[in-house]
Length: 242
Image (tube, rainbow, N blue to C red; front, top):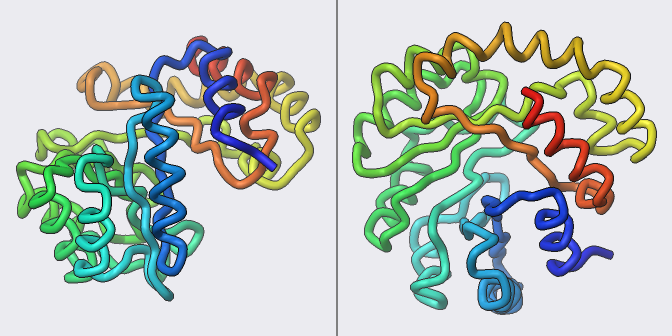
């Protein structure tokens, strides 16, 4: 019940000039999905930054041979690989330096996809460090609650790491993902100043030390009203206030 025109309209209405887009490419429907991705980029080449997101059975990514097959179908379509890593299954996700992931990072690199958007698992920050060290030519953008306590140290150690935080409205995420639109808007407006203050306390030191390595993300997915104009304007205003 949602098409790309509506998504694009919402982004443009709120003043977003570019958006990372995680385009799904799944087995059995890969040809159809690649057509959707291609048409979207033909129509909105300057709005979306296209990432290929492909999940296999019981894994947050397909085998490297299958990823290569998908990329061969549209060799010049994608900018990056991701989002890689599942949520909310962080406690059982493979670590960033597992063979499952590193083989796909090699495929991405060999196809000119030098950006990987990665959702880190629980207790895997040093595994992420090993992946960052092994792939210095790949820019990793990571996010997630479990890596947040370690991100300042990791960014200081590895110039190829960026962090996107979408947890400023953390207490309202259940409403954002599965609740009622107006209830979400009312809750955010009610707690606005409190959330801004908490976010400043959490992120000010890192942003002041590395101002070009932290990014604000809205993590919009799951339900149609995430792309409603009212919600988009609210998220944009909150980000700009922050």
